[in-house]
Image 1 (tube, one colour):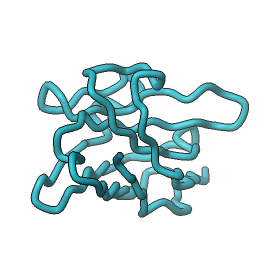
Image 2 (cartoon, helix red, strand yellow; image 1 turned 60 degrees about the horizontal axis):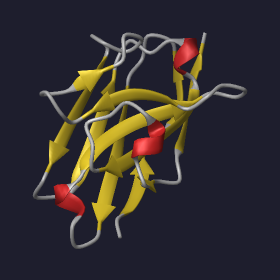
Image 3 (tube, helix red, strand yellow; image 1 turned 180 degrees about the horizontal axis):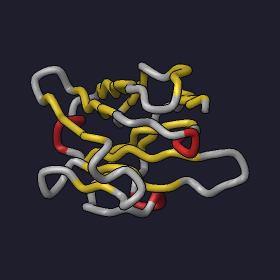
Image 4 (cartoon, rainbow, N blue to C red; image 1 turned 60 degrees about the vertical axis):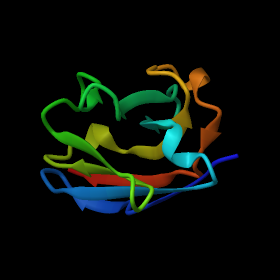
Length: 119
């Protein structure tokens, strides 16, 4: 079992930055692939970033977001720069065994953290 807890969400103006953090716990947490996803109201949950290939990103955030992992602290951070109103969503971290952008491939999820970007 892996437990995930996100933190760092909030309200920010367009063009600003936020840093999300996900802390993993559980005996085998360090062995999992980690990903960040988001879900806006009325939309499906979408992949944002993953910890494989030195950072894998969706086209919508590439060049603006950066994922990093600290194995010693069991954390995965998402640095978000140049935020846009369309980035407004609940952001989730997830742990799985596959290098995948599909939410269904991740059995472990955090509770989510709200990010709101005002125009």
